[in-house]
Each structure stands twice: as C-alpha cells, then as structure tokens.
Image (cartoon, rainbow, N blue to C red; front, side, top):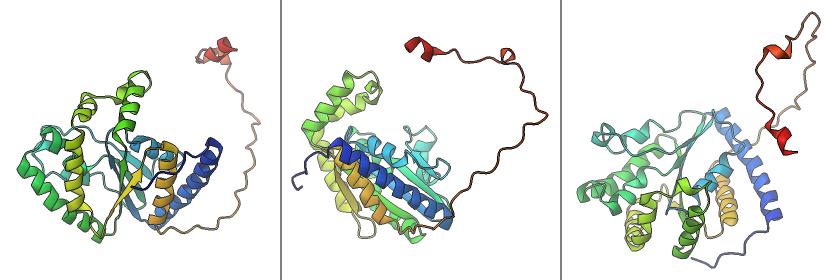
Length: 267
C-alpha cells in the first residue's frame, strides 16, 4: 500500500464532500430515471470506517430510492436456507440503489474466523460466490465492492475512543473486541477470500481508511466513476402561488397539545 496523503484540511474536505454529494444526487436521479439497479458492498475490519462512508453517501439521497441494508445474524429458519437466499430479497429493483453494510461476505470473514460456519460451508461459499456475483452482473445489476483497509494500531485507537464515547459505545460488541485477538486470522481469511472473489467482472476496490476524511472523499469519487450516469437538464422550478385562506379559521391553540419548549431553557 502506498504512503497515504496528508489529512485533508477540514475546509477543503467539507467543500469537496458537498461537491461529491451533489454529484451523488445527480447519479441517483439517473438511476431512478433509467431504471438502473445498483448494489454496493462495504466490507472491512471492525472500525474501518464503513459506516461513516455510508452515512456521507446517503446523507442527501432519497430514502425511497436508496436503501442501506445491515442484516442481523440469521434466524433459525434463515440458517437452514441457501446461504445467499436472505440477501437476494434485498437486492435492488429497477431504479434503486442498495448499500450493503456488510454482506454475504460475512461467511468469508467473521463466520470463518469465529467458527460460525463449517469448513465445508466456507469452501462452498468461496466456490459459489463468484458465480453468484456473475449472475447478478449478467442480469444487469451494477455491482460494486469496497474493502476498507485499516491498520492494527488505528483500529485499536478507534476501539479505545468508542469505549469512552457514550454515543459510540454501542458499536463495540464482543465480536468486535475478539477481533483484536484474531488479527492474523482475519488477515488470512481476507487474503483467501480475495483470491477467490476478486474476479475480473467485479474487482475489490480497496479503500485506505487510515484517514477517515480522505477515505470518504476517495470512496465517493471512485463510486461516481462506476455508474454511467448522465446529468439531465431540468427547467427551473417555479414556486406556485399560495392558496387563499379566505373563509378559513384556525382552531384555538389551547385545544392542541404542543411539545414543551425545552430550547427556551437553554438561552
């Protein structure tokens, strides 16, 4: 991995982020207009920055067109299904973009390392996954895969920050903490997974997430190159005239229950 560039200054980062987010709006409008189907996979170690990147991508996008899928552990019934089956239900329909915050690659990583699947199930996954993805691409789905790469020291720093932050403490699970003791096991699992699933039809795009700001900008800029969207020239929207309120009387405010003015206590 090449030496990372210096951390983007906040002003430059925020300016570029807004520009990229504006382009994302154009991209999503094209997807909705043309009926394209886009599926984006976000994978990587715990605390690698996947969630933060997803939030910046979806921040200004319409939720009826763009969905984020973060599935919990399988139910007893799902555990008996074909492994890819429960993910199929979440794939995009025409005019939709779906972002997978972790995906079917759970089997190539956490399930393999922590023994949640058998060796036979893991090998079957490595064999079937490329074929599964080729089927999606052959059917016209634009499939994009990102792997967020973080160093061992940086992961430790982020874990420590979460422990002391009441807003982020929920992000630390026992599985996350155990990953610290299995760093090499996860590295081996990732390397094996890449050998089988970094296919010509759908390469893994590795994002250096050592610096969060840089990683978010780099990921979004790259994503915009992966979807062949076109900007549509639109007429300027004109604000319609307000309807006349002649003959309408507003009910007395005392008949309604208002939320207490908590803000007034703060000033």
